[in-house]
Image 1 (cartoon, rainbow, N blue to C red):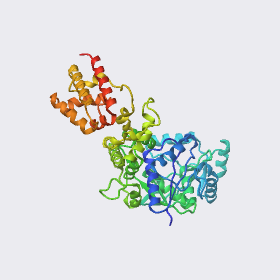
Image 2 (image 1 turned 180 degrees about the vertical axis):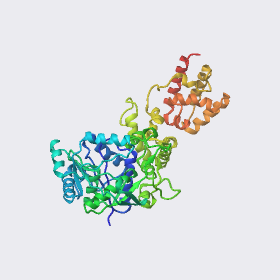
Image 3 (image 1 turned 90 degrees about the horizontal axis):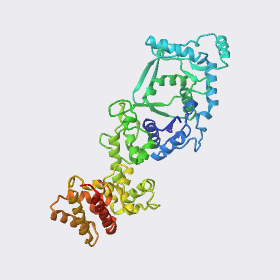
Image 4 (image 1 turned 30 degrees about the vertical axis):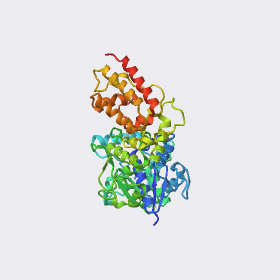
Length: 493
């Protein structure tokens, strides 16, 4: 059997973590087994469709490195791959179900259904259709449909007794009492199918072998299985994945850091780190392996590595993993990754195109400090800026010179004088000169180095000071120290 799996997003907004994790598991399973992974846009709820959402879904997949063998953009043997373009198939299935007595037309108005829900709520009964049109004379139902301008829905006729057993690849056999299942809608009054009908028809028509989806769909699985049987179709293997929880064990939401996958890209996460992190939300190679390449994950991924307990989304863990991936990049790869960030975020005054190669001498030092690519700009902008840096003169005092402006000014004056005599201009010679000055001034190195760092970088946190000064060059360093001294003269006290 050739494995065929599908990712069926609805174009109703941004692709979020839980949705993309399902796509990733589909893709990993297909690649592991040498099968096919297809994308099918499930856009039958026309009211909720958002313009541009489909392309945002594709962008998220491409960013993660997930490719597809069939889809609406590239076609395939089972085209079309948008459900809104497959309506005749669903109509054909509905007519067969009606002819076989497995489904029926329902003329109940929204007002009646709303009243029914309120009664059920007042009696603390589970919500669900009461089967009002199930056994009514057909002529009576059709007359009522005509009175409502031909509007009706089609419902599946669920057995009134017995048990439907769903075999789930993670949980084994799960039994459902048919009496507790209502006759759900297959086709809506607007002529579009519900997810229940469209997914079953399309999965069968597209020869889908395995369906990965969240376990919130487990309660719908018996309905789908009954529909497969009514249509005389072979069901796929169901794999219902546990939901992803926040660190507080509540439902995952934005307050836990769960945002659009595209937002993670915008924050500076690496796609390979994100893929690794998502893969471990419900799956594990073993009890010790954490960081893996894409090829390693594909080689190890299979259903038997999936768990049945909910995974926890930990943004701190993701950020830490991203930092580890950044540190593992070669210097050339790191500079290539940060190039677009420098182009986008450095001040307009910096000439374009930005030469990221300027940072090569300190690239490994920056890599050790950043956990997100977006942080690189804050660690490097001063290498590209000319003229005065944007910082407040008071910040030059730091803690060591908090109440001693004249002391700070004298120290910076001495630093400039000492550095003016450094030759050759290397990090080693600069360090020796500054440490020697700290000893001579009887200052702790940290006290002296803080105003120096702010003077030459404009920041309290930067790459290692001596390497930074060496890379800036003598002329710019001395000019920035002179500017800092002039600022200190303007500081009160």
